[in-house]
Length: 85
Image 1 (cartoon, one colour):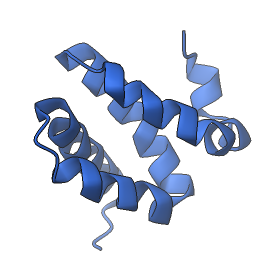
Image 2: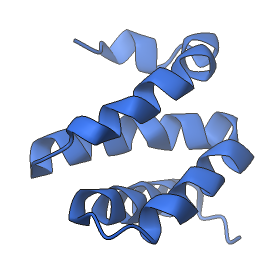
Image 3: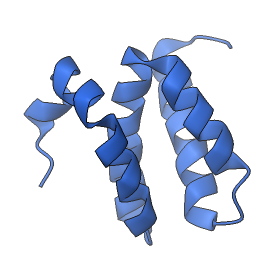
Image 4: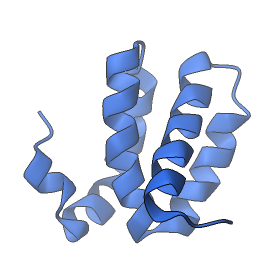
């Protein structure tokens, strides 16, 4: 189980990014997608270049959950930061 306290630990998130990215292969419902989106939004705040690259790949995917994940992460990030890329 991924704890809320670990989401706040920048070093843990950066070190776990590749493992967390692999979790996407197991997303098959709204709840998993939304939970993973929150985690990736935090990682996006820390290492945007790496995550944006992955979001572009997921956005072009034919897998519904990949595409949905990329959109939800983008919505959460931009609604929180008000940044324009």
